[in-house]
Image 1 (cartoon, rainbow, N blue to C red):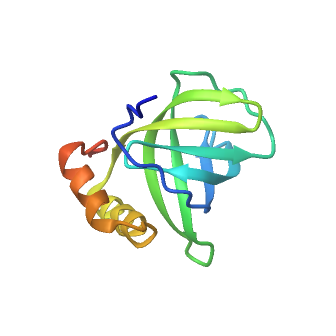
Image 2: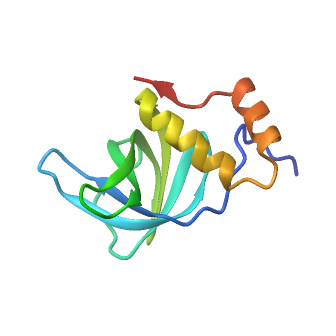
Length: 126
C-alpha cells in the first residue's frame, strides 16, 4: 500500500492546548505526531468538537512566565475518543520559523524534510 501523505509525520511529543471556542475554553493534550500538514493530539478528556470545525492549537514550548508557544489556526479532521486530528490552515511568520526549526531539529533526515516542505508547503502564512 502506498503512502499518499504529502508530509512526513514525526513522533514529537510536546504539550499542546486547543482553544475550543471564543469563550477561551482550552483543552490540554500532548502531541502524538506532527507534520507540516497537521497534528494528532492525545487528550485526557474528550471534547465536543466536530470534524470540520475550525479552532486554534498551541504547541507549548516553554511553560514559564511568559509562556512560549507556536499557535496555529486548524480544522478538525477527526475526533476519536482521546485522539484529535487537525489539519493546519495558517500560522504567522514568526511562529512558522519556530515550528520549522522544531521539525528540523526532531527529524532524522532534515534535508529530506526541507525538500518535502518546498514541494508541499502545507501551512499558509497569515
